Amino acid sequence: MNATQAQPRRDRIISIDHISKTFPTPLWRLRKFFRRSIKPPVQALSDVTFDVRAGEIFGLIGRNGAGKTTLTKIIATLVQPTSGAVKVGGFDSVRDDEKVRAQVGLATAEERSFYWRLTVEQNLMFFARLYGLSDALARRRIIELVEQFELKDLVSRRFGELSTGNKQRMAFARAMLSKPLVLLLDEPTRSLDPLAAARMRSLINSLAGGSPPTTILLTSHNLTEVEELCARIAIISRGRIRALGTPKELRAEHRQTERVRLTVNGLARERVHQILNNDADEIEQQDNALVVSFTRETGDDRFDRIVRALHDDGGKILSFETERATLLEVLESYEQEHEAGEES
Image 1: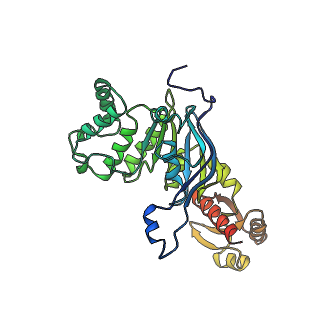
Image 2: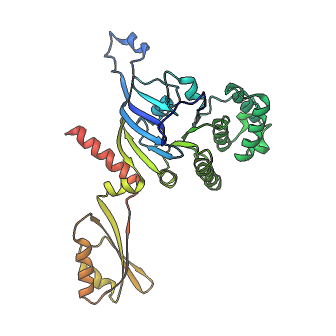
Image 3: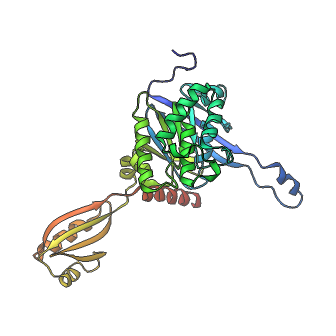
């Protein structure tokens, strides 16, 4: 066993165990103590528990202020939890913070940590030295990374002169300088054009599938991207994990309605209107057929009722399809459920 590595459970690289974080009332508010009441401390996280497996791309989604950034910073040792424990590669984020930092790369949408007057190469060299890389190793890594992240033609350009998309690439490249065991990504394709975003997603997949694999925790508001990349997803709301599972499991567990499209011929549009009355939401002409669309609650008999009515009047069902719940619908459903619980 490497002296710099503890022995974690084989399939678990990140272990988050009953993490809570409370931010106290800022001291400057005390000056207003005698004029108005002081706002209570902010409970950013409450009893958060989950694991991330080796080589897994794990998604964390939720509204702004849900606790995603706070949790990411705790894993990266930038913020200490109020209670609970985080382990990365078997090391505790508080007791073994230096060892954890050596294994974690953090790429956020925040640009202020770079030196705007230094070039791309100078910035990467500066941070490579902070990681403890020798100059020779740092130069080799920088050559690899500027090629990998399409920054090769910009190495002599000042950071402040880069486009927003290239600054995003810089953040990712910096996070990869030390070849981390764990990569924390915040909105990794934000500000990238569609082709560059597709290449970035391909790179993320290749890192997770590499040897050794990089374990990736991804936070993003691009839910289509999260669903495409992530093996499992946690939904966080008001500092608590509300649901966790594969995209398929989350949709199946929280599917309340589904959109159905039936393609039928042999009937005129006006006749279909008469037959279905108010059962159909929309009837469209498509070539020589009609497409009947409607939304039903899971388990109701609307589908059977419509098919039977069309068939009994001489219609022929050519095909049907159902649209699965989107990740956005699942997220909204959990948010609404939580808000309803608070009001009751």
